[in-house]
Length: 360
Image (cartoon, rainbow, N blue to C red):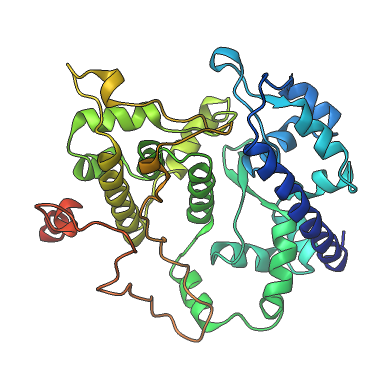
């Protein structure tokens, strides 16, 4: 598929997506008297003409709604959802194209550029990987959505030819590589989209911090244990192989000072909100009175009025803009999101442990 064909397909998919999103929103707010009939994920993938990896990616992207299996078993797909997708005018190619992934070579061919230039664009954060796999040498091979590459070609055509801007060259010469960071950010955002429970949302933010940073932000060990217990995972869990799980565990951790700081800030703000909704359970507590189960990430759920209020969050630092400057932007000193409560007895940076780290 050429860039022009991809752009034309993208426009058609966007129009179809608006219609299907309206149907999904209507279904999410419908409370049928009897449980909806469901099918196993494997059968749903077969009926939708998708390989299993494509099906799992479609669920991860929110293109296919699933529901938890009986007793917390493997996810299942409502028959109504399968019927809706099969009735789409673009079926079966439309859905498969929206989850089509490409590596560096195919991505470069799609954009009509050299593979080396594609790699530089990816390292600079211009395009973001959606998933990865390990090759025979256990090296990470990033994969990108073909749809997103087509969008990038429309949005930034000047980056596909000509001299690389100075800001980007400076980044790359300094060894910058934003691929893992961008993958991490998108993964966190998609997990946050699946839950409104404040403790589960804080747990998602906590996944980007290593144990040392986490212990500095969340000093109460019972709160850390609770975050681990309510942490949402992708619908189909982590990769099956030990090597892939270990690699994912490493890639999930923020590894640059500015990203670590922003993750710590978001976790601190999320914890403030979660504690205001309900405290974490401690030994001897009446669990039924003090806690509520985290809502399922795979099906519609009702939340208390307190939980429906948005969790305060600050956006992570944006990648270095592609301009003739290599100066990193600084966040406004006095910026505070709307609705964020002032910290209690301690100032925010003190609670983040930032003062202790700067002293060392």
